[in-house]
Length: 163
Figure 1: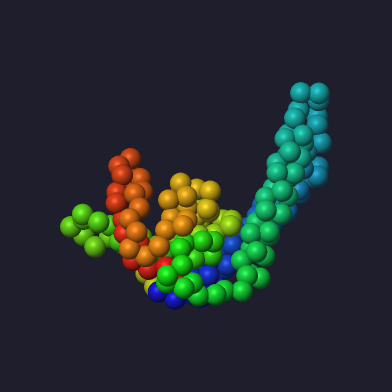
Figure 2: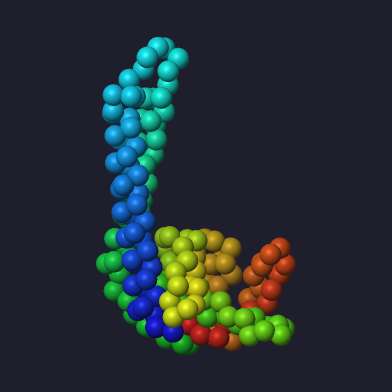
């Protein structure tokens, strides 16, 4: 698995999220300032609601831009195999006690938790260090066992690779 490809895929997904947020903010702003937002009576709150939405969308644009810039400017480095999991590492897990060879891939990120990207027909999940999965992985090394919740059940995994 190529860590650079994964980093690039996450960066591209964050750029797409940023552009979508910009478009939504522009549309919300137009709705808030358009002729139809002028109140017809004291009970007409469409304009007020549209302005709240526009403000929220503009805040979302700022957050999305910060996430994208953080990823796009980060110099990628390979992680030494004997070092524990930290931020900016890619972790490969394999399920223990499973008939299937189930593998999971997590990218430990300072932002964009919950984002999923497809690289080489594999799903890579971005998790933050403060998430339950991030907390379980931070500080672990190759061959360590971690338990993660899957569909309400605890599943044991072994860390097979750290990049």
